[in-house]
Amino acid sequence: MAELIDGKKVSQELKDDVRTEVEGLKDKGIEPVLAVILVGQDPASTVYVNNKKKACEYTGIRSLSYELPEETTEEELLELIDKLNEDDNCDGILVQLPLPKHINEDKIIKRISPDKDVDGFHPESVGRLSLGERGFKSCTPAGVIELLKRSGTQIDGKHAVVVGRSNIVGKPMAMLLLRENATVTVCHSHTANLKELTRLADILIVAIGKPKFIDASYVKEGATVIDVGIHRLEGKKLCGDVDFESVSKVAGKITPVPGGVGPMTIAELMNNCMEAAEMHANK
Ligand code: GUN
Image 1: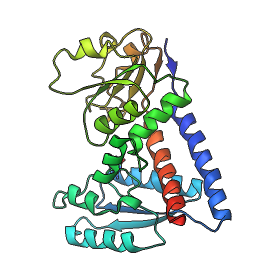
Image 2: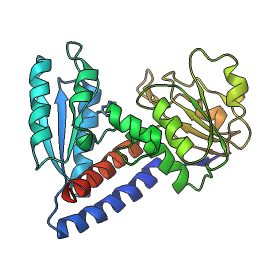
Image 3: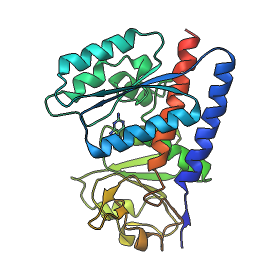
């Protein structure tokens, strides 16, 4: 039976580290501030945003909440971002996605100053990550790296296979693994012989958005399996992209859903906010 990688525990450790660092900043008169923007009332987004605000409270980061109506125009949202970009009292800007259909997400992401891009979605942040330069890391992939490190999984020299190539997870995940000296293979919906490739993985990271898609037949004995997916099944139970029951019998280590990658994303966001405040204070 695989060893469980406990995302709740690791994220708590990371949040506690951030909290200590924020206390240190406050002693120097620096208070990190995050602007959290939610447009509309999507139930899942509302839960995520509330969890982010709670994590701010825990770590000592001040959150400014902007809950805007569904009818908000793209122009109005851009104006708010411009105002927050200029505001010296705001360190980070988070626009919860997805946005209503009449707003162009790409345009919104590009308008956020790269200095305040705590989600790490701006092309400049993505470019810096790819070049191995300092910059904000996309929170979910950064959380996966932290989970691997804090659970004692060696990345250097190992073969990591990423299933999924989204801009938010798959692509930045591959870049961060490369930075850690893994040999990286990225698979996606057009990959031929997916199973042959996933069975080569020492570290298998799954972010495809299909419930329980990866079963034990895709996994090498003893591999570390990280499940980024989250789905609500009928009957309300949560599951990931990995069939936990069968894969946990062959994997060496595995993340559960819930309680695996999910909590890490918010902890990494807090870490980015703290770093943003530190950077602005030193400018
Ligand atoms: N929607 C789903 N995940 C995320 C995230 O990490 N950041 C933002 N801003 N929106 C999301």
